[in-house]
Amino acid sequence: MGKSISSDSFLVQREAKDIYIFLSDFTNFSHLMPEQVQNWSATPDQCSFEIKGLATLGMRMIERLPFSKVVMEGEGKLPFDFKLSCHFEVEGETSTKVQLVMDADMNPFISMMAEKPMRDFINLLAARLKQVMES
Image 1 (tube, rainbow, N blue to C red):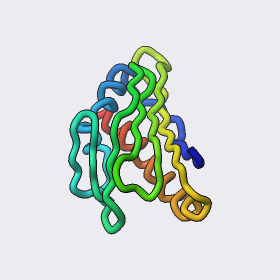
Image 2: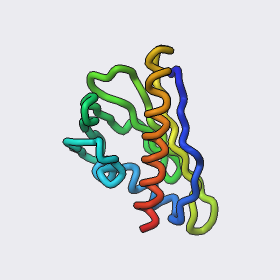
Image 3: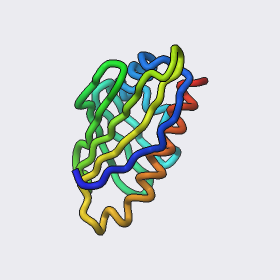
Image 4: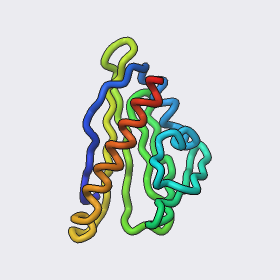
C-alpha cells in the first residue's frame, strides 16, 4: 500500500475485550458514522454506505486478532484500494490505548486531494469510538 494515515493514539476507559467485540462487528459501526454517511447497511462481516455527494463504498473484515487488532479492507468499485486497521493494547485494568490506521494505494494526485479528508475522517471515527465506548 502507498499512503499510511494514522489517527492520534488515544486512551479509552474500557477493557480491550470490549473494544475488540465492538469493532469486530460492522453492525456496531453505525454509531461511529458521521452525518455525511447515508444508506448504511451492515452484517457482522461486511458493510456498505454512501458518502453524500461522493461515492458508494463497501468494506469487509479480513482479520480479527482477539483483543489487539481488527483489520478491514475496501470492497467494490473504489477509486483506490485501502485497509483500515484498528490497533489496541491494554494500558491498565480498565483502559486501552487505541489507534486507527488507514493504508491506501493512491497515486500522488489523489493522495494530495484525499489525504486531509481521510485524516479528518479517521480522527472523527477515533473520537466517536472513544465517546461510544465510554458512554
